[in-house]
Image (tube, rainbow, N blue to C red; front, side, top):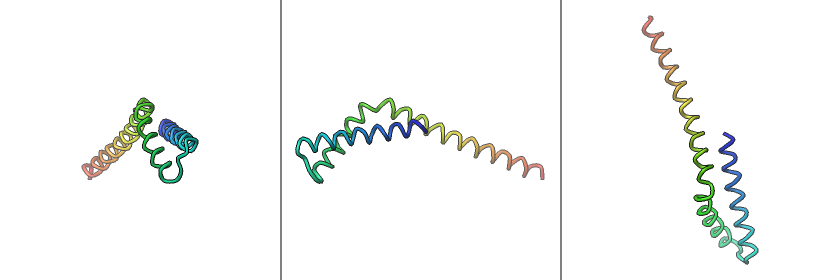
Length: 84
């Protein structure tokens, strides 16, 4: 789950950087927010692709573990039912 926190932190850092740059350029209010969100999102697509892949691998592993536990519990329950 460290990869999820790292990705989130980097996304926020990129957004804050664009907010600061936009403010220095003279953008204010909703325009500043919209421009910053859009540009940081586009930049994040390219800059954070490796980190995003790590996040997806991490999340996939988490759900695979949950699915394995569910399968084991179902098998155990089936054995108990078959024994009776």
